Length: 337
Image 1 (cartoon, helix red, strand yellow):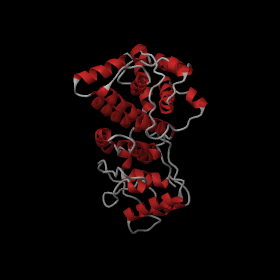
Image 2: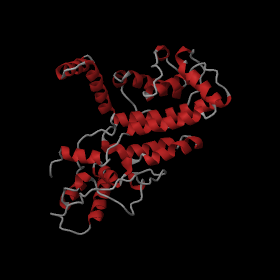
Image 3: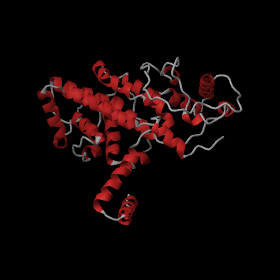
Image 4: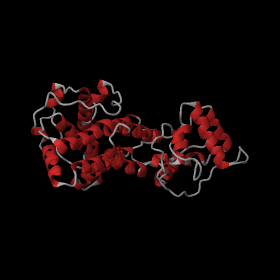
């Protein structure tokens, strides 16, 4: 089999085969928060006021538990302790809200300041508000509950699922997981979020779905993936026939929001393309994936690590003039972690 090199990675990223799962979740949460806070200034003002001052509110020992959606993916204690401050707090408080009991140690933890570019902090502050003596009533309380139910039932389960199963091959399954999580939400939330889910379903492109099937540990999935490629290629010499590697038009596919499997996620009737990584392989080589999963580079399905590096380099460039000093500062910062 031909070696998969950096040119393939560049091609996949340029064509949009790899996008950021975590960013898509942030957009969904933004829509829910903005709608729940409302266009009426009184509602927005009251929730926002409590959200900003949540660190000063006392804990309500009798807060209502919320158990919508699936529980968070199970993480070992040593992994939880090694999470960033925001992720650690988020994981713990989601579990607490689902159980209806806030551990004393968690109640004493400081929560990050309001920063709308740090969406984990924003989510954490809404959860902290829910377990506090906030005094919200009527529509304000209903709006807060809508936000918290979305964070508990969709945002955080999808976040940690993507962080644990971070390979780009898992992208289509993350879409299925998100759709399953959304079934727990109220109609007004679905009306807000579904348009965004449809627009951002880049991992539902036919080539991504076929790629996921080829890399599956389930032989039935791999057979399904190989058969789809054979259908796309048509008749030809299996020893020399290759896939179509010409430039492709990128258009987000229409997804079936009731899908429970990769095969049901889109319509396979037209516009089906094979994965870029198999186009340079002969049909005979493609058939070989029936017996063993295709091996691909472990690229992430989110860009968070890249964003972190860009931020680090930008900050170092603002402080230090020479390349040597910038490099030294970055290395020192990494070594201190």
